[in-house]
Image (tube, rainbow, N blue to C red):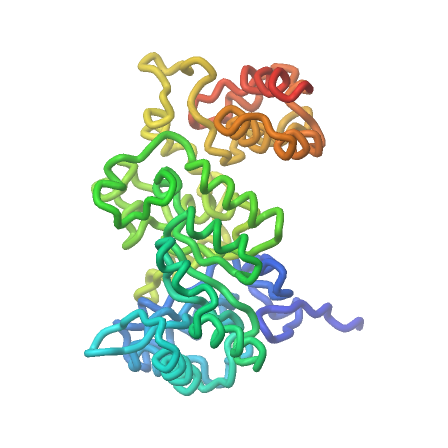
Length: 410
């Protein structure tokens, strides 16, 4: 009998006969393949070593091969290390640089010696001599970004990569403007970013923690975020998602959802993974039951993943009028791709995105070139209406395609 085909799962090769139903995506340019859903370290803070082992074993057996470890809490790190014993090579570790445990709590630092001590503690407690992704811990302001440029802290990060103690460099942020600047720097290979249907409506450099930010959500995806996702896609920079459920699971309950309606885990995950730059959704998992719920993603139907049935509040945000019909060109496109597939092969979401940018930024040679490079254009629309019937946000797509033809010339 022919030998089973080998596929890379994490850092270990396993045969197709043993792998789970988990799907994998490239981690940008790193050469690594990561599970579509992965595990955060927050839940381990509440578990003892035995429960940590049980949770990690189920995660690994189910095909999860990526973990984010932001905390410097010694107990949590030790429990994760214990849970990974004998299976370290099955897990890709995204560990944070610039985190220490001080005065009994997790603390951010840019001090080189403190960062060194924190990183060495991480390796020791995990029982490993390296991690795959060294993540520069939360950088949410331009002041922080400028502070680390050419700093001893960043030089230490580069040194760790040169020594092989980290294989790739990442950065985490909740600020789209800072994140965009970071990925354009040339040294960020993996971006950890807060992303979900609510956060995408935060404007410019707002973060979810800014006063009043979540009470003043705007219609459609923030243009800066659109540019960020587009840049990461074009340049093959990996994005790992944090807070896919809205931070603390807020989007899963209508009473706490920033959009006024409840999403399911499957809908939140589908929303994030619809963006081609996304490599994995890192989920906060407190116990086995939550892990089982999240693992349903592997077998979820298209209907369960479809988030258009929670679009009423988004239609209101997008400017759909009281009669339910579109205003002018309709509600704002969120580039969710629910309208696809187009009968003529038009990449509708991309056409809408480029049109929005041309209308807000002005038609530039770069935007025209991106539009020209598309396989089909707005002028190819036959007004069949198949896309409009699938749009959850009331967008008058044929009219938008006509507008794109007029703007770009075809």
